Length: 472
Image 1 (spheres, one colour):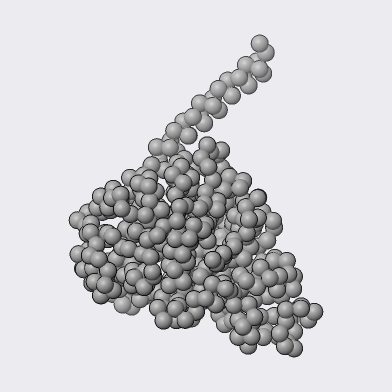
Image 2: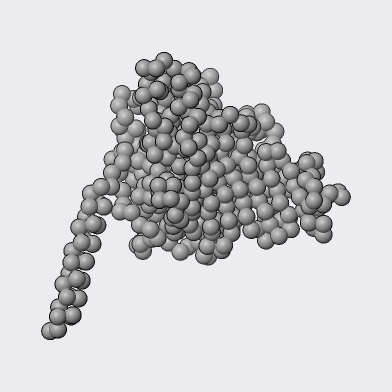
């Protein structure tokens, strides 16, 4: 044997040995909150023997029996709305805070609902609730770190999981949600309420109607000044959310902007998120706020805030379209989700709402041209109101919940479950939209180098049909 061949053989042996060590190390390093085991990190995807859950339809439920984890501020607001939806029964609630439990019980009592079974006492109490055989779905309305593990545990217990946003905070966690949903053939829906807002649903209807022509570009954001939440110390969103700004961070909360855009662009249903490049501004505002509002020795002044005040992430889809997503919960500015969609025939932009259409666009109403924004948009609502909002407008106004979108979202979930329809959002959406969190962080840390989105659908996106809001 020649020396070249011998060296090649030794090099190959060393390479394989190194690869095995690296793989073992990666597997050993995989751990997050909760008990569910998570899969090794995958850049693209591995084949699976499990059946896809794209378009999953489950047997009709006469009454949707609910187990509720988390009855804090967000949890109790959603619970009030759920009590006003026919065909639901909240059988059990779980929280570690006795005051929250009492608030949940009071809400159910005032609504004339049956007294729920209570699960509390430890972070793991929810697992006892999951062991019940009289629950169909589990609502996960908890701090972020519990989302993935509780959703996975719920599906492994034979329940459908409905989880607050984002659904996961690492690529491994995203894959765990996908694998568990497919293995158990259970729904895992991230409850992205902005997809059910009146404006976003009308724009979706306009896109479907061809108003903007071929879709080329979109922009979305979560711009919401939340420094005041830093004063939440023992309860409330700021008591745990502030800590995420202390960690290395990029886009911590992308789905309010990205979710509706993904539906406009048929992401996971004809197109797919391909790669992202991300950059962040300095992290300055929260440190200044802490110095101005807390004593020098206060906990908030002992931190170094790493998450940049503004993060901008640029996504490319497989079909070549571009998306900009921004996150800023620190600088003093008005609230905005931005919500811009641009095509060959025109543009819609939100905050404030306005539209510009090509001069020959047959959908144009009135004499405005693309050289000037048309801000009188009610005429477009009159023509393109989404059928779901056309049906639910009065109930949404009556019940509220972020302008009614929370109520419409919950009503639609229950409607689909009771009528044997596929949900509007599935686990692939939860994974793809949530994946921007870790990928934006990786990009920021790597001088804004692009990072690939995994194909969580394992190729099914190529043939999957666009979202269809069926109304029986």
